[in-house]
Length: 460
Image (tube, rainbow, N blue to C red; front, side, top):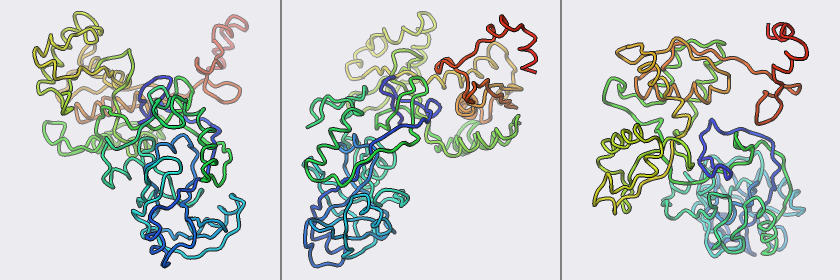
């Protein structure tokens, strides 16, 4: 999931923005452990000198969590003699890599990536191995043709390692929720990850595994609230599954939530028309919806988990109703103040009361239930639909999006018949005016200095 150190919480896709960020880039050599197997893969009887698999990354802070290397099964890899050592690089990138390393070399042999599978290399500065796992997402547009894999901090890395049999409790995850390494991490414990980058680069140089380092400016994910960089982080969260079939009830018909949502988009009118393709693309490509947050405010997720099995209490639905009745009487604090024994009795000793809260997009995305069935009932048998939802274009990933998912989950269709998307007032640089950027011109200022008519004319 996306993780913000300042929020101390998981984020949804709707809460992620992209801004330019300067990052360090490093080329790192992982020394071979299975020298005989590597020689055989390249058709050699033995290796004449020490060999290194070389990776390129823009996140040095993830190197302490490395647990594997990735090669593409169909790429050709070269074993390059650069004098005092051998380097394993994608054949297509040998020339650009040697130029970046400031080295000259000669290709001794080549092989397909598939031949490198499960050959073990050693971590540059920790006593553990990094086996080669095959992965189709490895690319040749930059780097070395080999990718370092830290399953706690990359989605592709996570699924690649899981596919090769790694269990959740084997994943090394030394970064705490505040962005600081755990104290027990050798060399870098207690350091904030962005500040640790130079120390990690220095450590790689010290152990003779750094081939090159530089800086790059690239588009990088940031928190929309704090405007600070995010990381990917493997944590236990609650999700709405996009691709699970719902086979019972009027909303099911065996279709997944993604399929129902895409069908609902086809039945919705869009003004302007381009909104349809935009929302369709977001729904078609999105991952499961992470709906839990690690915040001290918000609507609680009133679950009790068994301390040993991690399973939900068998009476979860009934318990949720009891919690709801208490919240109705005492407010949202009723859950946070609740002693589990009040609801579970003697069972309470075996269960943890979780403290996660709901994603606020779930709150706003379910307003159709409270409005169309509550304050302004429309009374359709299959679930009511509003004539129009009206908001800015940023809500294709926000309110329009979460309302569509919850409507399709509850009723099998969107909670609206039509979506109207308006634009934004922008500043002199073309950026949306917003409180967080501080680039707002208050309408009252124009009104007080030039009169209301000039404002009316401008709007017209």
